[in-house]
Amino acid sequence: MFEPTELLLRRIRAGDSEARQQLYDRSLPLLLRWAHGRLPHCARSANDTEDLVQTTLMRALRHLDGFQSSGSGAFLAYLRQILLNEVRHEIRSQRRHGGAHMQVDDIEIVDEGRSAIEQLVSAERLEAYERALSTLSRRQQELVLLRIEFGMSWKEIALELGGNADAVRMAVSRALQQMAQAIGEGYRDDQ
View 1 (cartoon, helix red, strand yellow):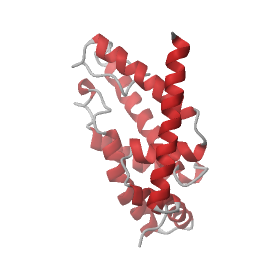
View 2 (tube, helix red, strand yellow):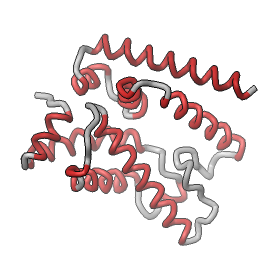
View 3 (cartoon, one colour):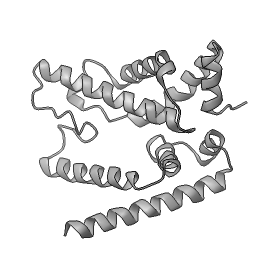
């Protein structure tokens, strides 16, 4: 039986270790899928992606008392932020040990195998995506993150947030259309 994250969090806070394991088991593949390719190649030697994901999950589960949920998708957004911080920490560590050319702020676009032009275009796309995402309501942001960044199916999102798969699909579609419009308007404003 599938339990939404909110219920698992309540059970964990009540001391249920089985719920803690269920949340870990559910979150691990989602976070691995999201993290795949986010760590620059030159930083992977010290810690691979799976290690960073496991560190992220363990840190999040250890600090659940300080986590304030603002909705069903909030926990994955919380994990995403912790993972980004872990990657930034790893990059800083690599910079201290000879990788001074590595960028910290744009960790999702750094890849030494790409040209400067490819990195610039990717940085602009990432900025446009983040700006457009910020124009959405919190619920729409959660839907987009769960679908686009975590690769959850319509059914998985519906189970997590409530509702049915068709309603989720339509809500995500509307949110993405709104984002596309915001990106288009941002592009026109830059011209």
